[in-house]
Image 1 (cartoon, rainbow, N blue to C red):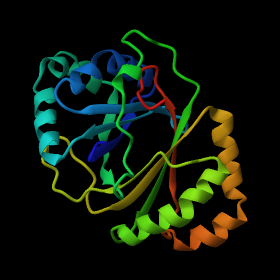
Image 2 (tube, rainbow, N blue to C red; image 1 turned 45 degrees about the horizontal axis):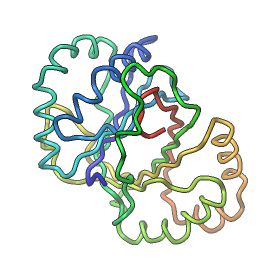
Image 3 (cartoon, one colour; image 1 turned 60 degrees about the vertical axis):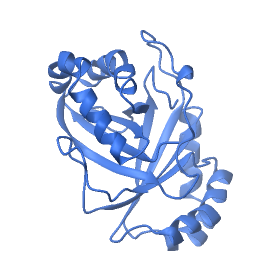
Image 4 (cartoon, rainbow, N blue to C red; image 1 turned 60 degrees about the horizontal axis):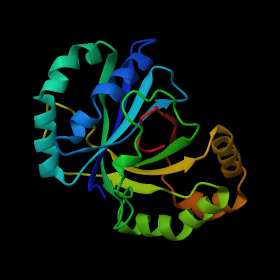
Length: 238
């Protein structure tokens, strides 16, 4: 289980998302993992055709600094960075996260399950990232409430949380890649077998009296952000 996770959202030039995805899936998966990080998943944002979203994990902050220095100073990035950067308008929308409680991180991935380089057919599955923001840190009490009250109801509605993460407040130890600071986030992820299942869940959630009565009063006042995500052909989360 990764102790540190980056949720990265890139804004791209129009029409460039598939260019970046093809490059990423072919050149930037194994080359990052070879230096000590895990590429957990890469996705098309279903609500923004010019947004690429991906997740990568690290064992701890110290190893994060080492791995990032090795990759961005290494041959794969040096060879392909110009091509990648040409697709991007902004790559600084990054949340630095950690498991919200013990056992709430992403399960240890089996990289053997990732399709091999050259695989081009994306899976039909969908992921949903739900992000809550507040004006103060999400503490243990919120995590306990989420596990006790929200998680079982979400499972009944068809969205069993796969992982629950909250802001990591350690100083960014690789400042060449900025992360968002001064914010407090709680992010949970769910996986669906297809688009219809995701849509059905969102409909049930919107019309759930129990959710409105038992959970919503304990959520932050700021509206939740939903990222509806379609895995790329080689995404490990799929």
